[in-house]
Image (cartoon, rainbow, N blue to C red; front, side, top):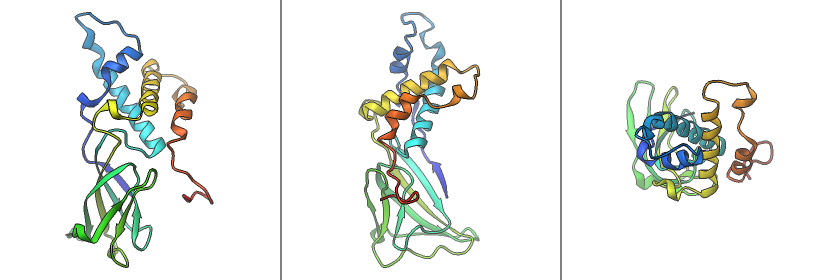
Length: 199
């Protein structure tokens, strides 16, 4: 499987001011924005790490999910929650020919941890040998940072500060996620039981 971010979080949506306050950087100077590019880079890295750890998209954007085989007969779990909408479903063969499927034939089943594409008939269409299915979907808690869950927003600031303070390099231990960030993220992770399957 391949997950491709189709649209990037715009810089204007990132909490640069909140992060600057979190770091207690000085304000009121002519060069206040001098470090903004560094702050943006640390915020993007922290968001990516937390999204990867929790399988939750913090800010809304579009993703393409590419699979070579279906996980179930009539359903396919999506790799990120919360999912808002399935924008398209297409089957591509080995030669590059693509069939765009009719949206009336499938629907989104929302779930806190494991949203699914659900086929309306008996079984999902066949993926040809060497071909792929491409699901384009929208996911994310919010379009504005102020609407991101407060605990995850705080985890991003803590982790971004951790990266900022160690941006010149550090030990392997320095690269590990701080314990307080791990604790915050734990409740947002998918529940895994019975050898890794979700109950």
